[in-house]
Every structure is written in C-alpha cells, then in structure tokens.
Image 1: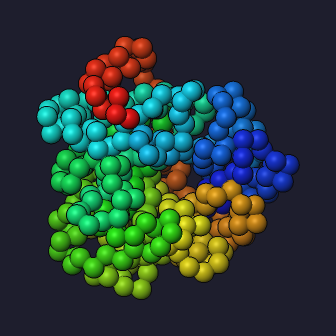
Image 2: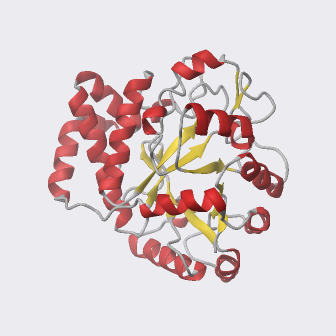
Length: 340
C-alpha cells in the first residue's frame, strides 16, 4: 500500500533519514528539482536508491521539464528546450509545423527523462494567459486561444507518451488569469463563469482523458470565493471533474507554496478532502515531509483506481532515431533554439 502523496528530496544524494522515511511513509511518487541534479550517473543512482527505499510498487518519478524557464535538466549534460510560446509562434506560421515541433520536442524530452529512469513529465500546460496576468505563466503558455493551446498541449502529451513518459496536465482549471504568482501569494480571479467556460476551461476539455493532472492554487470568485481550486470540493467536483470532464488522477500543485494557508498537515487534509487524489510536496524539507506523510491517507477507492490506471497507461517507448529527430527539431525551431 502507498500513501496519497508525492515527495521531494533534499539534495543530490539520499540521506539516511530520507531512506528510512521513504520506507516507512511509502509515498506514491517522488519529484525531482535542480537541487537533486548534478550529472546523469548521479541522478540515476539517486532515483534507483529512492525507489529501492520505497520498496513495492512502481514509484513514479516526476520532474518539471517544460523548456524555457521551467527546465530542471539542462547543460552541460542535457539540451536546452524552447519555452512553450515558441511552439505557438511556429503554429501561427504553419499549424502542421507547430504541432510537429511540439510533438517532436516532447518526444526528445521523453528520451532524456527515460534514460534516467524518470517516467512522469510535468507538462503540458493548458493555461490561457490574458493581458494583465502575472508573468508566472507568461511564455510557458502555447498561446492565448483555447483551441490552439489544446492542440499544442495534445501534441506534447502524445510526444511524451510515445517516449514512455506520462504527461501531467497543468494547471486545472486554469492559471492564465492569475494576477499573482501562487508560489508566493494567493491569486484571485473574478471573471464570471460564462467567460471561464468558453476560454480557460475550454482549453482543458480536449485533454480530459490524459492520465494525470495538477490543480491550480487559484481562487475563482464566481465558483468558490472561499477556497482555491486545490482545496475546493466545488471546483474539483463541478468544474474539473464535471464541466471539464477530467478523468485522470488529480494531484495538487505544491502544497508548500505561499498561496496556501494553514499548517502543512492542514493543507494536505484539505486537498484530499476537496477531491485531490494525490498531494504534491516539493521543497524537500524533512520536517514538512513527515507532516505530509502523517496527514496523507493510504490510497484507496477511486483515487487508487485512477492512480493505478494512470500508471498502467504508460507505454513502452517507440523506436526513434535520436540524432535525426534532434536535427529535424532544430530545423523546425530555427531561431527559437538560438533564442533559448
């Protein structure tokens, strides 16, 4: 049995405290950050030791590797990838080329991840930014039209899955209108529901069958003025599961972020009570990790079925000529690769 949380780790090597914690707490998964990364062999060793410590089960390993500003693996050991907006610009010139580049870029990212033992990539994002929004999404977004965003996000998700890596759809039901960075403050969106339905939520609907999704720490006053989406049974039940129709396993965004209030244990319980299947805790601070584990339930019921289904949907990587794929990708992206 595993617990309904995903944990970070403190650094590039597994400490004895963390080893004992992983064995006892049995998290569903592990998420990696730049602090955990030095070199390929070191990272493979860390992943292997962490999985061995947890023991039974697949123990998914996650990482944010969108490209641009959000890329945990980079030079000198891994390539630089362009931000999401670069695919959107190419899409505007040629829809077919934009979608091909997005899918190919994700396929190459998947190859980088799979070679390390990482089997979940925290992308694509389907957030639709608007004028005046905080820059936390910014050029991570694929565009400002829901249909375009959905199309590029779907291509990225397929590229990841072709490479044997599960995608995570971010940030349900939409972070594009947020006028604050939820890493530090709680964003409040006052748009009416009709507008949200045809813009923000619409971008997620064609992606509703993806295996994993992540919530937004954003308050939508037209839906639930008292709680951000992560902690709102109304938003998760009526919008994410209802109007959008997302059927996959749902994880919270990082519960240590400044947008949320209360103790780490209270945040964990609130996210689970609202309908999150998994709680994500990222900062690697050991005292907080223990509090999350104490508050997170064992996976059961619908949450266990959805997480098991997500893991089972992972495919064996399709054959690819990596050198040819990288040449094609660079040719498609042109100046965008230089700018990155």
